Image (cartoon, rainbow, N blue to C red; front, side, top):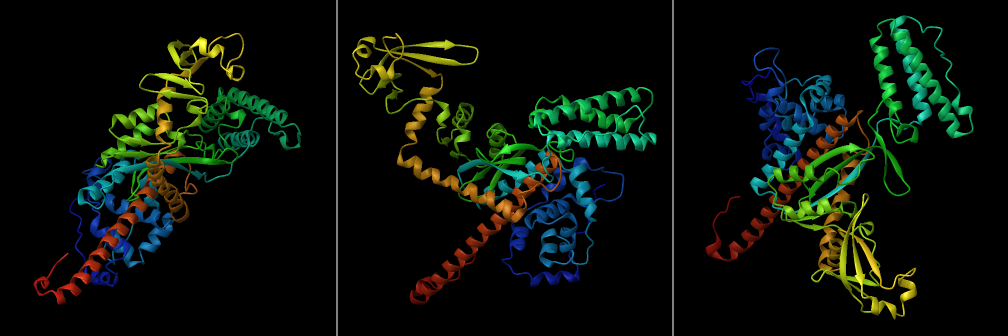
Length: 517
């Protein structure tokens, strides 16, 4: 139950807060960012009339933000906040007040918070900055970064071995012993040299074990064993599992293998987010398993970004975001995309062929051009066929390199989006694009900041939901830190102006009056 009349009056010990410097990051954040909206946002997740008085959601959110700001565990953040005056001031408590037990932080994350709630908190904080004029950016970049799972990656054989062991232990706990008709001798797959054979041996053994355990469960109630067996069947039924693309850990069954580059892989999750390129504030965050393809949840990210009140005029991304659906969505919202063309989007030899979008014609190196086109609709692909003038192709000196078979005139078949993509590729050769695209570089430094200083390099818990909360609170933490820096730089610039003004006012009498900031 929430207590709407909780006493927030500072005690006599609050004078200790005077020791905190005015420009301390946490003091600046406390004065400028209003978190009171959190209580109303989470009111529905508490009973209004019954139960013991709960800790205010605002206090819990501040604790979780503080935790990610300094990369602390639940125990450490409570311990540090009980001793550090700046932490207490940021939390809005009196120095003698008791903080919640560390276990309440875990309960709060599990029972009170939903992903959408943290999205709303992140959006509201950015909106406050927009309303106060702290930021007025119109350029947004998008990218993703990876986080390692909080467990090791196991092979399919090892996962199956652990599943079998888990079934036996659970059954023994419920029954008292494992029936004799169930073979508990797990094959030594490590002694089998052939990798595929080892997998097959373990697959046959586990499936046989599951079958015999199910027969046993028909005769008696074994709810815990049944749960483990159903989980094992679900894992085994996934066709990706035996190809090493499914579950790799029983501890974290939602983590997946992804690619950092062509030759480097990781096991964990991907965090994708949008960020203002100048003020470096994160607007929206989504999290998915490691095999996630960049740009899949672009629509969601764009909607969340626009909720913060930011007017997006330019959007930057790498080649992974060069997709027609994304480009169309950016244009629909009145923004201009700055995304390099993915070479796989169209395969055209630009040294020999060029496209004129006004006349919808292709021109070859020898001056020939297309005279008609035809639309082709096949099951796997839609395309256009462009036909060059046969007479010119017949006598062309490059004919042998350009045309194969008995075809007289060159026929160029391209995807339906190729002409549009070609136009993008030509725009990106201009100096304006190359210069503006440099703004995206800030995304890489933000990735490094969140990983190196705020713990986003590795998951703190298990599962997609836990990783999503971690990533979104990390984004909130770096935003608060950035807001403090922006406000501090504005404060120092005002001091510099006052200094210069005071020097000139001594020399120019009519300027000798007081200014206040």
